[in-house]
Length: 165
Image 1: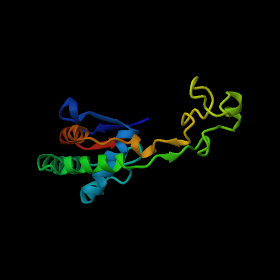
Image 2: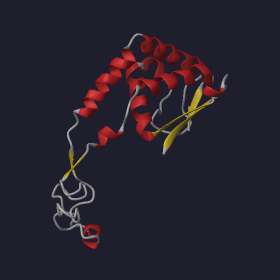
Image 3: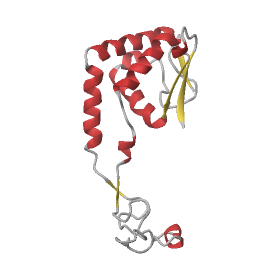
Image 4: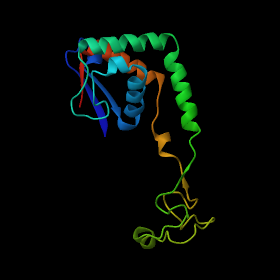
C-alpha cells in the first residue's frame, strides 16, 4: 500500500505525481506536520488516502519552507536524529511465540515449529524470530531520508496543490 499524491494543476511532470509506500510516507508526513504545523494545518488527513491535501498556496509555502531547511541543514539534522532514534529502538518480544522461541499455535504445530530450533539443521523454532524469542522493532521499518524530502519539495513547487489518494 502506498500514498499516491496527485498534483491538482501541475506545471511539470514532476508536479503531477508523488508516491511513497506507507513505510516512507509516515515519517515524511510526521516530519512535515511536526516541523511546519502552521503550513500543514490546511490538510487534516496526512495519514489517509481520502483525497485531502493542500491548495496551491499551501503547497508553495511548504516547498519554500522545505527548500530553506534543506539548504540550512535542518532537514539533515532531523534525518540524523531520526536515524539515531530508530537505531536505538530495542528489539521486541516476538508476537508469534510470545518470546519463547517456540510456536505452540496451530500453525506452529502443523509446520513443526513447536520444538526448539535445531542449531545444525535450522529446523524447528518460531519462524518469526528464528527461535530467539525477539524480533526487530517495527519502528525500524519506517525510513526517513533527505532525498525523499527533496523530491517532495520539488513535487510541491510544481504541483499546483495536491490530493493524497
